[in-house]
Image (cartoon, rainbow, N blue to C red; front, side, top):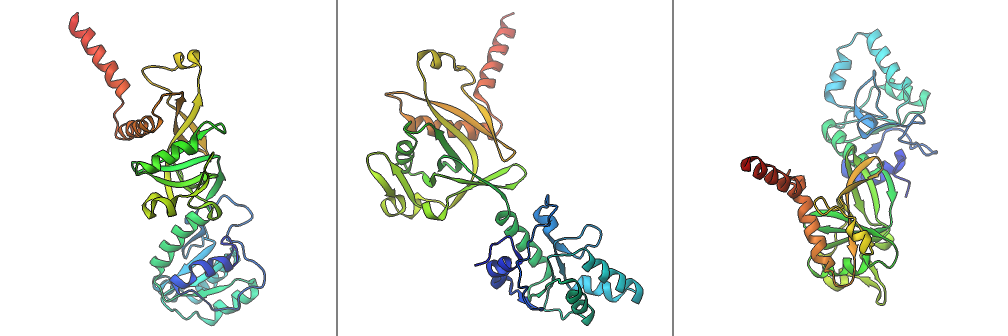
Length: 314
């Protein structure tokens, strides 16, 4: 199968759903969807006819064809020339539109593939934007265990042997879900959104020291795994000595942020020590993060109460 970042790969992956078909012979060479200049978003990759800021995939529907038919002959020829001189990756005709012969002439002259579809132009643009946003998103792989806890995506990080997999196993036993162990893949699908998923080779597996590799889906059922989730919180597991524990802010805790692919993700450090119920602490950390997302911070609330109490005693 062709890579999804090429036109041929796009047609193979989503072509059946949109009923895409080649109006010109498929190119022998791979046609990249991203231009050499780069820096494109999914919105600039696909869109309706645009000769000012041309898209890589130009979609022509009934409204665009009606607009072209209303132009004078010189304006019509100029618009078609500008369309193909921008070197789009392809021109897609929606609603089973049959292109005029001039489109085929310019397509042959410039080496631009033409595609047709029975779907309407709005559906083509919407589906391709969504597909390309995920397929061409900037990605990175991190070390840790990615879980869904109380509806939030939580990444457990820490040194080898600190207990990430054991904690993940306990969370799964408590009804939470595994997304990826060891090598979660993070994709930036929006300016401030990271989505985590698992490489296909590692899906459903969790390695626990002493037990080996476990198939979580086979052991706990379908509800114990999830394919992907938005990353909302990073929990860094770390062993502390007494001095290290004493240095943690007792009001604010260890809340900070970590930047991944340009996105700032809230991070807390979870002290690991004998006798601590890490599963309860992790669930509590997630509940506390949910409150922060809703605008409530217990530390700020306590400070406000103290300030009001001091003010009322004067």
